[in-house]
Amino acid sequence: MEGSSFAARSVQLSFVAIVAGAWYLASETGSVSRLFLPPPREVIAAIERLVATQAFWSAVTVTLTTITKAFVIALVAGVLTGYVLTRSKLAMRVIEPVLSGLFTIPITLFLPMFILFFGIGAGSKVAYGATYAFFPIALNTIAAFSKAEERYLRAARSMGAGAWDCFRHVLLPGAMPVLITGMRIGFFICFASVLGGETISSVAGVGRNIALAAELMEPARMYAWIMFVILTSVTLNMVVYSVENRIRSR
Image 1 (tube, one colour):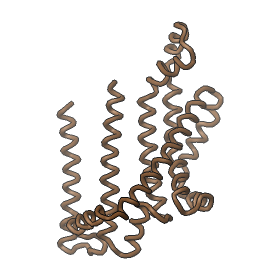
Image 2 (cartoon, rainbow, N blue to C red):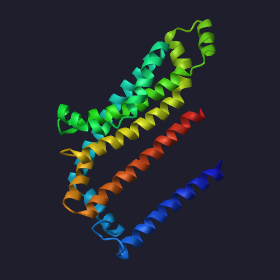
Image 3 (tube, rainbow, N blue to C red):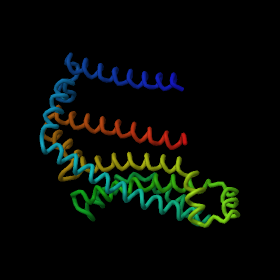
Image 4 (cartoon, rainbow, N blue to C red):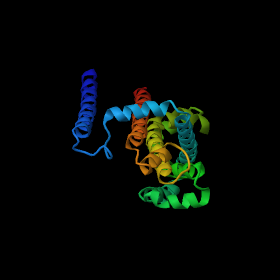
């Protein structure tokens, strides 16, 4: 187990080293214009300047607040919807295919509608991110609770367990691994959709600053924001993946 984990980490670090080396060579040798790909040292210097400004932390706060609101809405709505649907086989047969079909539609097509209804500010990004994240959470909740072993439920009821006891001690523990996976997928879809929405049309946030740097032809600052997003995303993914593995191993 430790050997396979070490091998995986080695491959990951090798990939990062190759990308960084290719970036350095391409920018420093002039094979790619610095307007399109600034050298790593310029991007690192831009990150240091950004982190020292109040505007950076204001933008990060706006984006994190928007993501948090959108994910909480998606989580509550998705889990409740998925669980309620699994209580009826008819509802499962009728509504689950509809949810699956809607999830295949690029929600980005409807971003102008969200902006029309909720404005150009954070409200439209909350609605957009929550809508996008709702579907994987709901579908994974349906998959999690619909696979509950009926014999375990019958055994619990035969020992006097009520509806709440069955949910707490039988349904939820069995569904938790799939639920966690749905939450992880939903969170990162929410993360990406909020940032994408901010980049396309917004007045504040990390995505807006990326778009603004591109409009002002400041590639080093634009890449600095992008690097911050990548590092944040990778760090969050590692944390969530670790928590997911801990829950699965119980």
